[in-house]
Length: 297
Image (cartoon, rainbow, N blue to C red; front, side):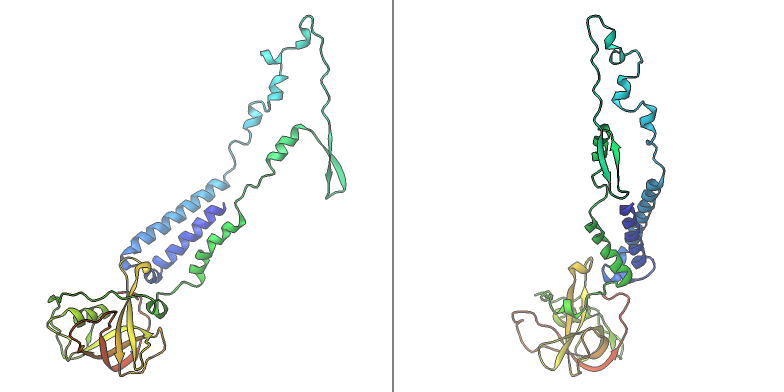
């Protein structure tokens, strides 16, 4: 019954974050939602079916009485079998008296008296001295379920971004970027800004105002901070940060989601230096925003 209850709770937790909210986006990409809903439903069905099976009355409880019980019963049943014949009726054989079973006095502590236990009951009693349940430490498996219900873990933030490495830019420039249209600031994903900054040989970012949305990650260099988005291929386990260094605007507190507007600062070095180099943005405007439903790119 305990296992089935855990299945039901786990199924409810999966359905809660996938079918009735967008919390699942903190852990996986949007395309996994149907699979999570299906998995949660299957877990609940299995748990409910197991509980129904556990609560049903046992079908084999009366089987022993129907078949005659213990071997001693068959030995003295007198049904005409070789084991049930009277050995004392054979000529030349003297019947031997059957020894009386020794009675064992077993103390009963809760009533202060003793009761008699037949030796045949010893094997039956010893067979029930073993524990039928699992170890109590198995209940610790419920902690992740309770965590999802009470305090769902948030999306990855500045702590993870500061300790993850960003893939280096590609060596070959690409020309697949479309020209930027319009006169005002262009809303752009952080990943696209990084791609245009490093890989666009037409330098389409030159002189254009762009607006990036991400969370704040502090920088060890003075006078700059990073507007960051985490990018995932499947789930949060393979996430890596996409960072753009922002200059000219004071850094908000870490993990604050912002929309920062500015222009690209072209790099002056001719050859890409060793290590990770982040593209830079000269900030002109900053607006604090709420955490988006889909925090990853």
